[in-house]
Image 1 (tube, rainbow, N blue to C red):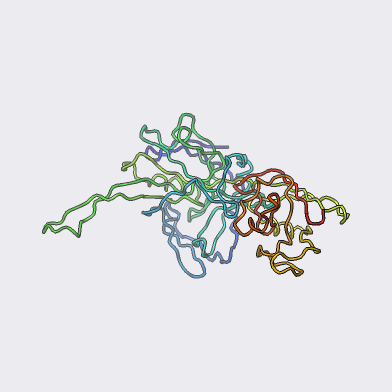
Image 2 (cartoon, helix red, strand yellow):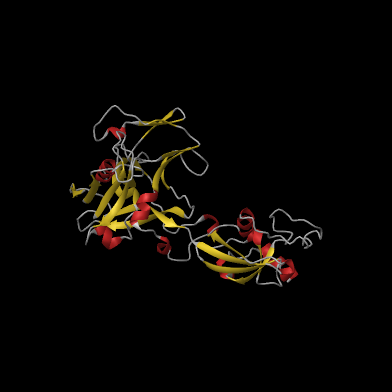
Length: 372
């Protein structure tokens, strides 16, 4: 059973919730840190604002509003796979699958990420990932955002939970201005305001005031729907800009590359077909899957001796011939290009990244090309 209704004129957002927990309790996974406490004695709707979460004995106060954040750009760089050259929407998953996959993970501080609670996926098959996108929504014509929310997990005193977009309201601002999809989870909203600050550098004896533009943002990642609505409702109604930048996280499937490996007839090895993911290093991916790769009879390019260089890109004993799918690999760098100057269809497996640009497709690779 679902209950729908309009939550306030300021937020202009339709909230959909369920009378029963549809996907169970929030899945807290320990990631290098112990979740020691997230309790609160208060049961008020704003209790989560003052309820501390303890990471290894250090208290962090949850906070919704903060100044100076910039929205995440959609021009994303996907690690080794590089910047996407395809429409990433081809990798979207249906609402039902996204709802089953979302979970919250407690993350310890690292060089790559601050400590906190973040959205992730169960992803038992390791074929999904969480992407981050931002949309600019114009609210100048009124009507609010125009989205319906579905709470997957919540009911906690501290406001933690998982809330996703269930549907877009017909004719609403989100449907008109963005590429929201059911299954997305809103993690941040931001807009620009003007504040007046004192001009300390003024030579006048009387104090003067100057206008200053600031970005005001509210964070909604890993919140139940009550806390999500409260956060969205706290965004200033009258601002410098009618544009609200909404950042969402989305479950997507990993682009896949099907690789057929062919061995020289003299080796009497059957063809092998393996499935790789975009961004994987060809040599490492094949070795971890137990596939023979290096040419045992090949002399090293750098020293003329036996053995390999350990993926340094100098010995060329892992060279393969790309019979099909050369465009699915990253461009050669100068050293590899010079070593393989007379063999344009060959690549060093240790320097080849499959699915470059988040592409997917089929490849045919001939192993140990010197023995063909």
